Each structure stands twice: as C-alpha cells, then as structure tokens.
Image 1 (cartoon, rainbow, N blue to C red):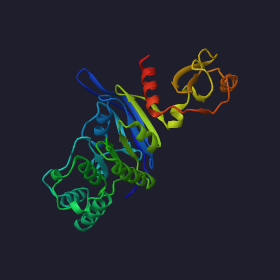
Image 2 (tube, helix red, strand yellow; image 1 turned 60 degrees about the vertical axis):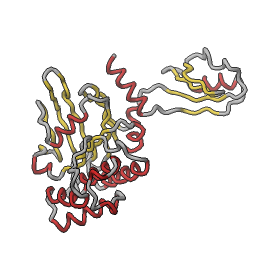
Image 3 (spheres, rainbow, N blue to C red; image 1 turned 135 degrees about the vertical axis):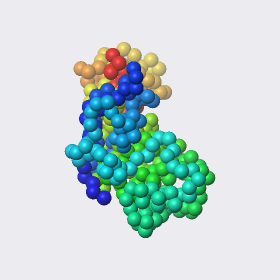
Image 4 (cartoon, rainbow, N blue to C red; image 1 turned 180 degrees about the vertical axis):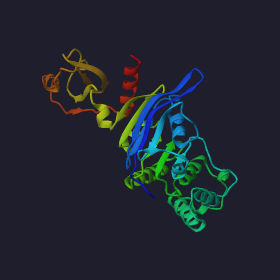
Length: 303
C-alpha cells in the first residue's frame, strides 16, 4: 500500500434545507498520525466523514488526499467504518472479509490470507464460519474494523470505532490503529470517549454546530487553560482555603483542596499561604482533561 499522504478537507459546507450540517470546515489529517474528531451528537462529524468517503457530496469545498482531489479510484483504497453496522448479517465472517478484500482489488488467494490474518488478530479465528448475525455486538464491531483493514488501506476513516467494546477489545483496537498510523496511514476517528481520544490521538479536532472550533495536540489545546493546583494540608482547619488572594477554591476532598489560579497569580503565593497554615503533604499541578477542554471550548464558542 502506498502511504505517506495527508488528508485535507478544505472549506467543506453542507446544508439540509435550513439546517447547516457543515459550515466551511477545513481540517488536515497528517499521514502517520491518529486524529480524533470530537463533538456533540448532530454537530456534523458523521456528515464530514461521509463526504470524505464519497457517500455524500458537499455543497462547497473540496477533499484532497496527497494534494489531489479524492476521487472514486482513490477511495477504493480508503478504509471506512460507519457508526451503524455495514456488514451482511447472514454472510460468514471469513467469506465476507474475503469478498470485501476482493472488491477493493485483492486477488482471491491474497484476500483469503488477509481475511484469516485479521480474524486471528481480533480473536475471531474460531468464528470464521459463523454468520455475522450470530456474533455479539462487540464482536460485530471487531469484524467491522477488520473489513476496513483487510485490503491494506491508504487512509482510515472510522466513526465511533470503540462503541460497545470491552476493555480488552479496546486495547487491541488501539494497538491496531497505532500500528496503522506508524506505517504512514492517516487515521481519523470520532468518539465520545474523550479519555480514550486524549490517550491515543496525536491531534484532536473539536467541531461545534458544523464548524471547526479547535484543532491541535492536547498540549496545544491546553494553552490558555486556567492553572490548577491540588494542595493537601492535613492539619489545617476545615475552613482553610477560603479567601486566598488570586486563588479560587473549586473543590474540597477531605484535607485536600483544588485551587484555580487567576492569570496574574503565583502558585508560590498559594504554597506560602498553605505553609503558613501547617505542613504541606501535597502540592502539584493539575492538567485539564480533554473533557474539560472540550466543555471550555464550546462555552467560549457560545459566548
């Protein structure tokens, strides 16, 4: 498979009557990176993905892969996993994966080998002769991903790939996606599981009402977020922490306190205030989670 090309969405817009599904969306998914696509239900993630794979046509804008328009021939080498099940329910697993690999250009012998390889990878080799409808929803999800991978795609577009998976299956799928990215394949996946996105992704794109409102590494998205510190003064009074200049007390947990610092405030002043109360057992910075960043970005966008 030829890899190493970036996916680019350039000014994509899509309307359904009076409803704006996508509003001038521009997004780059670099080759060799895992990119997370997050937003609320109805904000346009699935619409954008369907435009990339050619199921929908944008009203404006262009999709490019490796700098050239993504046309039908190139889409044959695109691996797509829809949120809804897209498999033939009464078809046997090995037969189905072999067929799909051939549809994407593999010869019959190579397709059978690839089907067996991916069923083995996802722990389904002993179910190769079972019909898809006989599987649990989690195992159907594994087969769905295998269908997107079996022919060796140049690009992966995955809509909620971790939905319904148990922790072991999540680990297997995470490893597979990282391997694909390390091999030079651009990977774009959507998920509501923000902790998983934060852990896996090289970059995250946040969409709100069809518009891209933030994009970057998690570290880049944290820039500008309020500074927070956990402080533990075991022997302090129960009321300790109220009224400290430049520090807002936002959470209590036993003797521990979580403070949010004002932009001009110094954490050393907070530490001195704590030491004046008693011995300090804990004092450390708290990075905002992707979930907290997500909510803050949406609040800022709505302001």
